Length: 109
Figure: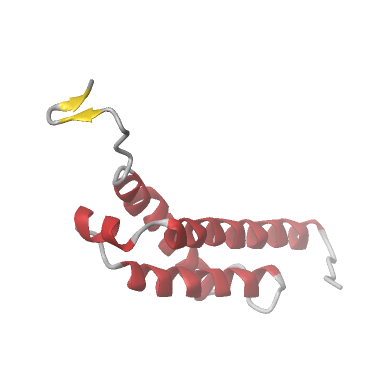
């Protein structure tokens, strides 16, 4: 059982759960994205992002179960890695493969 001794402990635990949710969201998106999308957009490879985001999710989970502190360097690094993926890589790779069936040689018709 998670022991919460005060309001500040509760706030830090909620932040830790948020870190885990953020890194989990980024990892799930990276899993569902095809590897070709990373290469086409000029971003790092899918395998590298899977390792980075997998470690971020692991550290986020460790913070959520209070094995690591929310203020540890690993938890902060997982927030930064997930934030970079969601703010920079995700918008770029999301556009790949969105072409519909009504695409002509000069765009949609």
